[in-house]
Image (tube, rainbow, N blue to C red; front, side, top):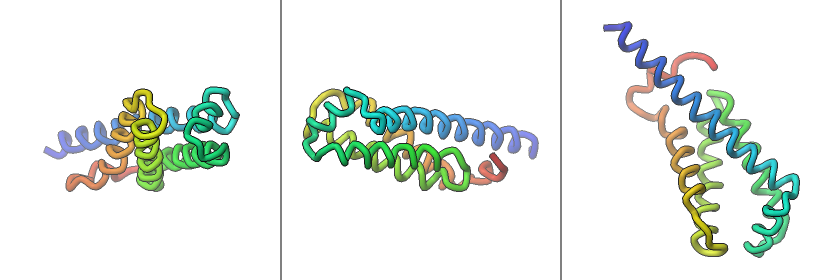
Length: 130
């Protein structure tokens, strides 16, 4: 019945919203640490070897993507942007700096899920306002 469909739609919107806010918080913190020049971030980007400008670009992209995630209308663009950032972080861990790529892979999966969720054929559950 219609009430079951509406409850299902509300649940999906809520889960999508929680995923967006969670990703936004995680990327905001990461971006802020990069832009603030946290010692660990300066050292990490020194290991990458592309210069500290890359730390600023990456931090800025993370903050931009996080802001985009917070609005339903811009969430897909933010998720795609952050998926590219997370993919780059994954590749950087695997090829340049070592360490565990698991956090970057999890963020990549989260951002892909956020971007792909509205593309489902049953996207009726995204109708509504934030």
